[in-house]
Image (cartoon, rainbow, N blue to C red; front, side, top):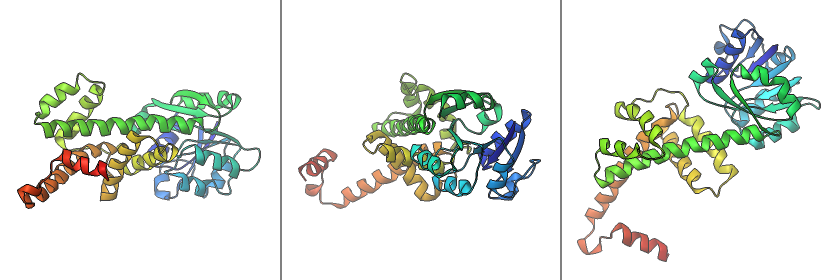
Length: 301
């Protein structure tokens, strides 16, 4: 099949390479031409790439990038694989030329899964169109048809919300253990008996080594958490997880792996507690308030 891949970041480049290795004719385009080196066919523009293909795949960073690369293109079929949320898919469907067939198919997994073909692909769109392109997408991993157009984008936000909530809960659980005087070994032993046992075991080595190999940049995780929060602002846990990611991203941690938010939670919690302790020590003893007293004051106001 003739396939155009627009966007050659960490995921797009690996998707393009896997399709090429599977025997498909692949033409690529990327805003930074150097990323296209090594691919046999490189288009000068997104529109040129789309004209040369039966199906065009987009894999870009955010909704604005999607608007830019799809402006003026006229693909036969477009499979949108970025994490941009359902609102961006609705906007895209309206902007594309009449008659363009569209699927949204974001993926769950990172670089290693893209290379191995073990991604999960969440597809939204008409069943007949899904059936046509499911074999192509199966080259990339396990394919799930989750509903009509936009359902794939929605499914990806649901999946990512669990990632962010889990990593935030792990960080806060470890911080709580520190505050209560549990050793880190004891904390991990406790967590091994909880629903986040697998996550705690998986992240332990990185935490102890303070080494977070970049698989999923924290800046992109923050973008996805923003999409989740925008879709359902009443979700308190999602908002809390987003706030940790946003704070770390605002402090220039965006290029680190999103799991580095664990170190941020632990380090920042330490710094904030030290600051509160210092401020409390500066007050006369009679004026000092416990955490419970401060909470009572807040509730009364």
